[in-house]
Length: 210
Image (cartoon, rainbow, N blue to C red):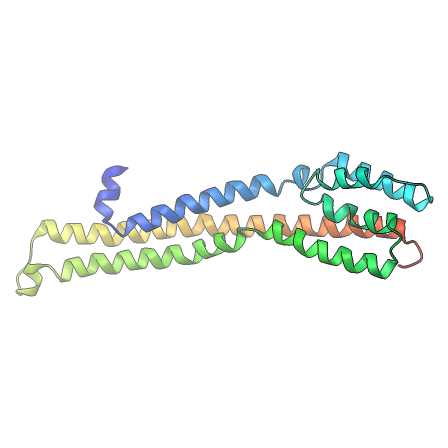
């Protein structure tokens, strides 16, 4: 593997760096966007239980709601309506606060996905840049300038730089694009689930507003 990196020349190192970065982002996002992490069953059950209590005019401790809000990434959105209801807010005020919390929650779901999409876009361009560097080494050799055949070793090195960088660029871009599409779909699914559960909770708390 090290010999391949040497044959590919210095343009391969930026590709290697972004490949490691892309892999780290893909693994982190796949772990973060799991449903069991974003919307644990226990958190949903506890939230709906508190919503039922509030809808029946029962008192719920603000501390209990605040502790529940720290139990998962989507919990602050789920319990936002509970906090507003327990504070006596109107349906309109609660809805506006839920929208604000939803925006910050969805930003967390989308985190780093833009960087992964950028890697998928930039990798082929870096590969093309390496190809150009390889071609420059071929045609810019002393033999080529003098009009001679040139050194076979120089020609071979230039060709290897060109081909290896092209291959590495595509090898990075294709999985990165596939990972971005899959993770984008996961983030959208988690967002839809959060919206649906929040809507159900809001409907329980303010039944005459929907």
